[in-house]
Image (cartoon, rainbow, N blue to C red; front, side, top):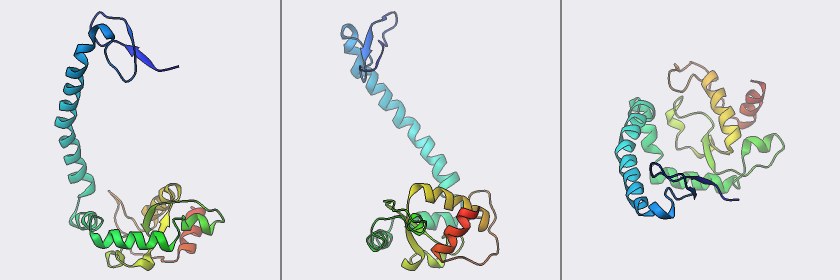
Length: 170
């Protein structure tokens, strides 16, 4: 059974199948309504993206440089090299005895903590979404990275197996 909603014309109670907004009797208003929604989205998108980019993504010079690094050709080639090296499998799951496909390449020691390791292939590993969330939480506690946190003076852990053991222990 298809999903339905009421016609957007005031006073009309006819049911319309999604994705339409107007019934057959009032369908001439459909194009105008869709155009107004697009205009609204375009006018409000800039406000949202500007706030996100300036407050969250580019909150400091270090974050700005980090953001710019991920848009370089060097990162694209390095990322592809690591994905092929690790056979598109999450290295954190693999150490736990599971084979999980993944397409995200993660820095073992975060860039925020040591930016000198950002282009080092030995500091990169393929990671799945579930492990990435757990690892990010662990990094925030261990290294003090992330918005609103202060970097801690700790010894970086560059061994994936040690990171997995500490992530699980958390």
